[in-house]
Image 1: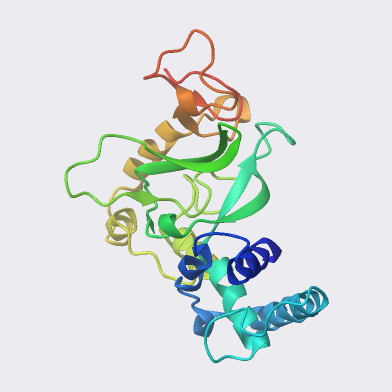
Image 2: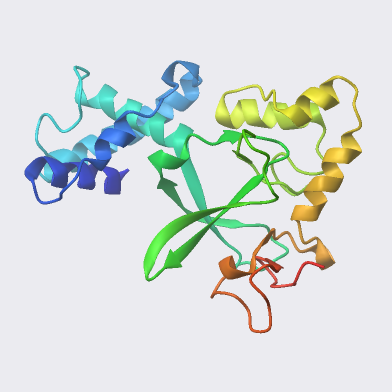
Length: 246
């Protein structure tokens, strides 16, 4: 939040070109759907942010609209909660521990991806020419007109809506974390009594699972540090342990 507010201050004072904050403010905040307890926690954060803004002499019209600053900050925090992407690494805890979140990124152009419990698009955070970037890639060939979907939660059994989670567990997780009841194609099939093993087999193709590894397969060029020696452009490798998919 501090980086977002600092960027907004720079835009208003003219020390930064462009209007990136407009895209952030245009995001949906879903404020009415958060529980009173979460709004109360947002309010405490907003109070701390207000103190910071006063200390740095932020302009009175820092945030758009008629809301008092405290309420506007709660709306901004709600936007971040609903629309941010995690920045993950396996470097600190190893491939068996699951992806370790060490940051969040607000990427307004990427929020248009809907969730699917059987995603056809993956994403990783990497440095591209020294600049932090979020990269999206197709997990398979997409048909013309087919919607590109990502997974908002982990794919494996360790956390979130994974291969071994039932449709009810997945939908409950998504409703708790992202405030919607999933109605993706996989959920509709399984809610109708369809074969849940089909989705699990397809997801298993996306995951390493070798020796308990919790990494996902990514295109070789998106491996940490670039394409490993000896691999071709069309190869896929585990983002955590580096194993080539066969």
